[in-house]
Image (cartoon, rainbow, N blue to C red; front, side, top):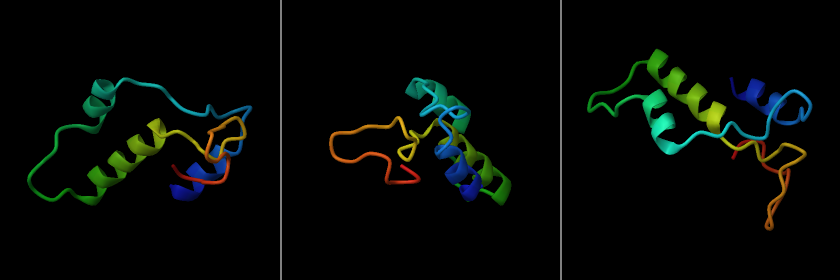
Length: 74
């Protein structure tokens, strides 16, 4: 999953730099915070959601005043 995300970050023609959503939308997609441990399936789903909505700082179009295009996951 991490390698797939890493590979997609450098494809500006097929991958957007980010998928914008307001915080309530992302929280709804992640689901409620439980007091008991999560199983592997729930963790995988959470990580996929995080990767989906994260800014791809390695994307060629990402420009920041402190750094640009150097971090694969941010």
